[in-house]
Image (cartoon, rainbow, N blue to C red):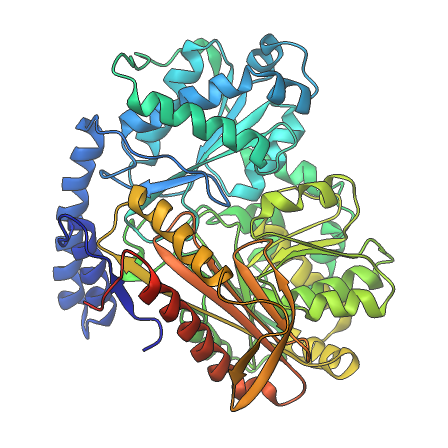
Length: 580
């Protein structure tokens, strides 16, 4: 029953080419031998080229909605060169508004033109073509550009502030599967654009979508474009870090080189080559450090390119073959803004690592506390409170952490979806700094991350988070935006404080309801369930957490109950989704 795909009947429910490609990707990943995998990979390539031609030729509009991290769409369906030009034009228009200019300490748009925009991408299909379309629009508006090429999101964020640029365009759908492309806009402080900016972009973009007289810019102006090497700029940025000492990390790596095994899964993404540059090839050559999935693969060898428990399993298995006492594995998504950790004994997601990171920050003498989202574990927040440190909780989305980070009110900022940043670092989530903090915590303590985590559990308590979700197929992005809001409103109307929900045979009384993002029920024992809809994928997500040692065994009951709450709302919906 759980994690199933639900089909919403529409006027024309049909299997799309991308849906077939995703099925072939699953078959490719399951193939028993390379020749079998190659057959499915070839089919994916054929579909991808077909959708690429549509992306180049189509002038069909779409509905643009900025989710927690910009605009995303399927290549050739929603995300086309024509629509990229329109959204870029909307961003340019927004940068001319008083709202943007005042928020970024500009008096005139000429300052934006002179300071320029950093433009970069992850490793997705057609990435360079989308960039060229955006560059033409920016140059037509007289805006200087810095072309950073393939570049991690966190690195690009640091580049914006280091260069004093007016903002950045980042072509990435983050961890979404192979059929997606995306566009993030960050203003001059390097952080994700807030709702006061994205709402203007969204409104103007949708006006352009309906405009019959839209004329795209014709060409790139090379006199306005400067190519840069972003990782070297990021290295300068790291020298000012308040959370890590890069030179000390290098010394500790060499001192422990015979005790350490490290594996980094780059997931065919923009983190490839970055760690070698940061740590230095001389040091890398002396370590047992292994890089995986560094080649270009637009289909991500058939898997969804996200740091997940499933993708961590082979890394952990490889670490377990090492005879060395200190082990660390990390996986990063294609734009390296998400990271997940492991050692030979434990898979460590961000809900767990955030506790280690906060404890590390406290040991560094930082006292600014933590900012997190409603969907994240309460473990780090509990550690902060027990140390008398402030806790800020926001809706899902790293852009919501901007006030706490920009005002230096939080030492650690994290969300459960494997994003993290730190005081004095970028306002954007950054998997690169996450890795460096993990290295520091491990090397300074001489302990694996699992040992550090278990020590924190014994000291501060036991928290067991989980999450699941349901995908809705056969529905367009435009239909989804209306449908998802209707379902969440149905859930909100069905419960109030004081109601009880049956969990594991026990009636749990709701002591608090949060509407900060979706709807979250907190029970009297501080366990909770949250249901929300994705703004970037046709998916409902639910999150939950139990507390108390040993209560991880009842997590399936919380998952099941969250699913039942969603089922009830779906049944009562006018759209009435049905099983395929």
